[in-house]
Structures are given as C-alpha cells and as structure tokens.
Amino acid sequence: MRMRWALAGVVVMVAAFLVGCGSSNTTGDACAEVRKTLTYYLTDSPEIKAVTAEVEKGYYGTGEPGKLKSAKDAYNKALGNALRPIVDKAKTPELKAAIADAADAYSEGNDDVEALQAVYKLCPQQP
Image 1 (cartoon, one colour):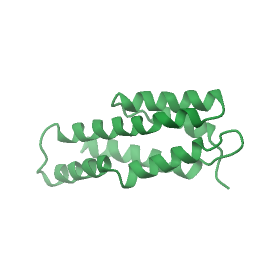
Image 2 (tube, one colour):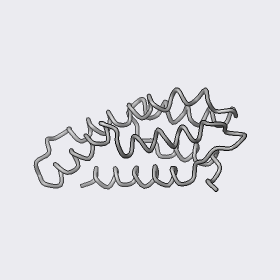
Image 3 (cartoon, one colour):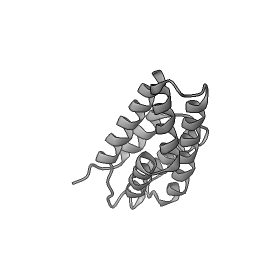
Image 4 (cartoon, one colour):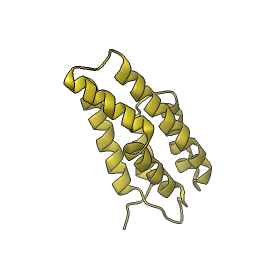
C-alpha cells in the first residue's frame, strides 16, 4: 500500500510538470523534449506498464516481495537515461544543470521529485 501511494505522488508530480513546462527562447527545445519524455514514461513506456502491473498485483494480494521495488527501480533508471540526452539541448547553464541532476538521480534508481521540480521551475508556463 505504501508503494502505491509513493507511486501516486510521483504521478502527480510528473503530471504537474507536464502541465507547466513549455518552451521559450531561453530554454529552446529542452522543456518540450522533457515534457515529451515524461509523457511517454508516464503513459506508454514498458517500465510504467510493469510498475502498474506490480501495483495491481499488490492490490489483489498476488504480488511477489520485491517485484514492485524492482519495477520501480527499472522505471526510474530508464527515465533517467532518457533525460540524459536532453541536457545538451538546454540553452541555459541552470537548465542544463537541473536536467542533468534529474537524469543523474533517476539513472541511479532514485525517485527524486525535487530534481524534477528544479527543472519545472526553469521551464516557463504553457500559454
């Protein structure tokens, strides 16, 4: 149950990021690319489907110990690895650093909502 709520917190944070992040002359395509990547990893990636399946198994009492954590770690690592190429698309040093920090944290398997918040703060609101 705790993992389900932890996952829900990540979903809410990523959804808030997707609503707020846009692109501008100072951020180039980096924010749009981050949004595209997060949308994919939140909706269609095999990793999020595996996490969802393990959450459902846990809900019905058929999950195996450690499987949800393994799926969540794989999800985080895949997301981090997908964010890494976007670093070079950022036009400001602050945005580059924020995306790199998020990529580093998630690539290590960490669920670092604060790192995503730092990127969110640097991406302008959508019109």
